[in-house]
Image 1 (cartoon, rainbow, N blue to C red):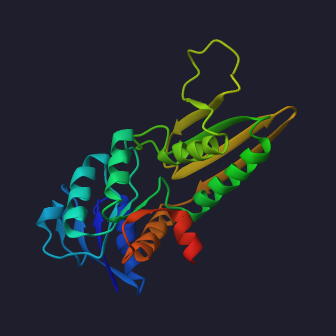
Image 2: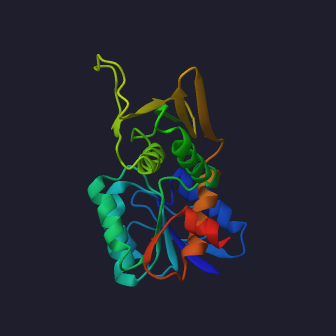
Length: 252
């Protein structure tokens, strides 16, 4: 039985994860961390990592980028693996995560959905075939409470596509002030915020007289919670290093 602590335990994702783990026999939640939350289930909720009186086998983080320093400090001090599912990190924070993976196992991805990760692989394949001839635009839609834009998933998709093109493209996030034709060296990024949209991503390959669109739509937050719990079970006991959804898929 894998023992899990959840950061952001009292948030929407934390509560979904708690519900999912009750239905599984391979893991259990033993603690939550939430600085403004209170206990709502059988496990205690602490304001800080360092208040915990139990040691988890792995931490699942669905909180806020500002919690990263404490997360990495606790996990490195106690040799605890971390599944990092929070988005909105700066380049400097992403470098911190990479550096920490030299000491502890870290599972890091901008999106825990298996479907999204399949979408990325399909986009990479399409880029290999179409990338030199087609303009590429990425459209993402999320609920009106989401803070970061573009989404971490959109950035993950764009970076994967750009990698297939030898990192020769640059990202254009806003065209309203641009008064010139679209450049071939661009990957366009567009964000929509409204209502309760869980998450939608479209990758548009626009060529001469034809358009190919790859799409993914999440209908509930549960798809991300399921992925994070699967990642936690996968990560427990692994050696130090950086892990992603592709590693979990290969093992299964």
